[in-house]
Image 1 (cartoon, rainbow, N blue to C red):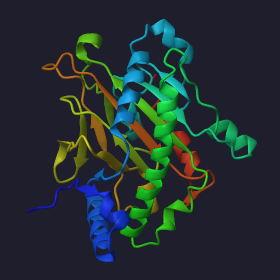
Image 2: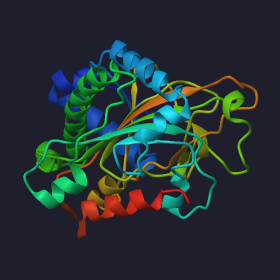
Image 3: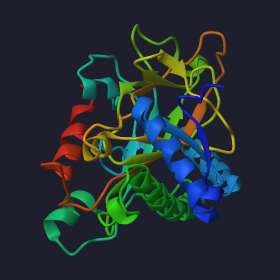
Image 4: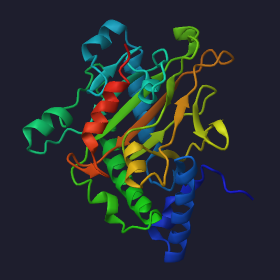
Length: 309
């Protein structure tokens, strides 16, 4: 049988397996990241009930009247509510598209480094909507799990690249990261999309690894490869979808590709479909130079690029 371009990796043998098993897993990861830039991972140990609680609380917020959400409105790259029309992710690859059909609650790293200039840009306090008090404890627990899981994935990636396990994590002692709870409203709520409009337009992510918990849907995630063009991403309710971003691709000298992807518009044949995705973007320590570029100068430029309008 032909190995899928986006394989499913059970992390349990990686964590506890013998050297031969770990080598086989690393080789599978290397092949996948050279083709699509995507993996699915199971055996991660993150409680599905935690993810359900985040979705439930976030949906309460998204369904509030616009006037109740507006006090939390922020520009792209800041902590708070990104309302309709805030982002157009296709802009990052030079594609002029209508704004993405989503709303987001956005959070980011907040523990200060002690450097005032760095902290003022990358480590500010998060904003927690008072209308949904159950959101904060669930998200904070989840973020701790995502930080740990992302480092473990970076260790796997280092071995897959033929490097020591700490090759990437030596640059994640005090990293930046972002976390978006993305709400994709239904068509019967927002109407028909404009021509060329997506829930999220085609783009690549900007950092090292992205850990995505998503829901199945007709208007869901698609991944691009040179061999197959746009294809629906495989789905497993137990799995996280992992993709690498631009910094990781550059770090590998473009051996691996930054996974190009999009989220389809709300479907005409499923008018009531709405989805919520939990998207954790992992990065690296401020000041990290990745093959000649300053990592965070690059990240800021890309965040500015996807601002709609």
